[in-house]
Image: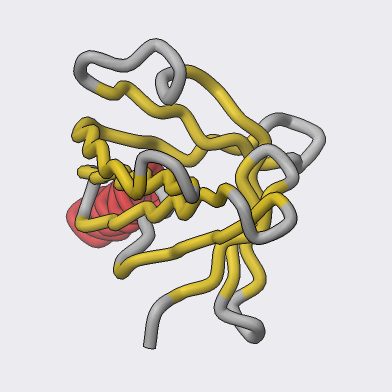
Length: 126
């Protein structure tokens, strides 16, 4: 009888540990999400986030009618966190960029294929 109770308790502990291990895995994104904007057709910018596992590449292309276009690329890591009130944030640690590093508000609409970072909507490439 004692052996049976010990086995049941051990199995319950293993199951609890498995649940905790799965729950601690953070949410990840995959693919490329982009957003574009322009100013009266004279100048514009396109920002793309390419996610793979915990890594992210940010590509920023700016253009204007005088100097043409310029592309910058930044690489780093990201993590999506959830506050106790349920709001999501995305934390970027980007090499060589203080502008793109930090904590930003985050939302995802899987049905629409979009994410929002600091209120800006980015659409997933197909």
